[in-house]
Amino acid sequence: MTAFSIRDAAILAEASYTPGAIRQPAIMHSCAHDDVQAHMLEGNILLLPGSNSISDYKNFNLRPIRLGRRKLRMDDNKAETGASGTVWHQGFLAYASEIFHWLIQKGTAPNFIIGHSLGAAAAQILAKSYNVPAIGFAAPRPKFSRGPVKHHRQCLLINRNDDIVPRLPTSFFHMGQVKKLSPAVKRALPAHSMKQYRAIVDEAQASGALPDKWAGGA
Image: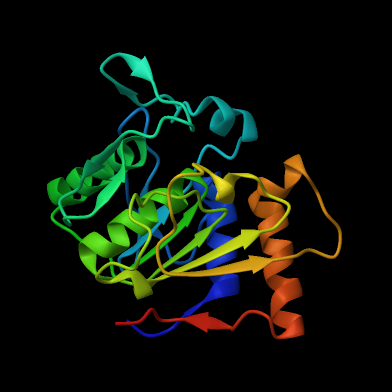
């Protein structure tokens, strides 16, 4: 996979909430699961929107993913081992697993993954599973172990310092390289939206704090 434009990734992540507006790369498949949003674009780019709501993350209701007939909360520290052998937050793992099995049914696999919010949590898990590059915006913490794991360098996570979601769950950890960006103007609750992440990508690239492209790492 050649390097992917981070700015283009941010544009696609914002457009993922209104998939009808996506023209290039065109959507080839969309996940039909009621509680999971995922789109496979031309070039096998996997695009994963999230719930995009701070209140959803405070209540941790994965819109709504239920395990054992109960809603998961963001402070629920249950963890399970995924197919990749890494221990993950069970709510994020359940979400990523639905996408993983949807891709198996479609007989396809991603070459690159882009995710926002809940989608960025799933992107970290799936980047390890498939060993492909991923860019996540406003990424929560899905990994139970503190240290690096195999393929962890495939992920680039772009998080705003004024967004609370990337700090949660507090007892878990991110995958890969995390760019913590301080905006010129703090936005508090609206900081989590992809509109604000698109703005800080432009801001950070203009100052040299963020590269133009991402191609992952070994």
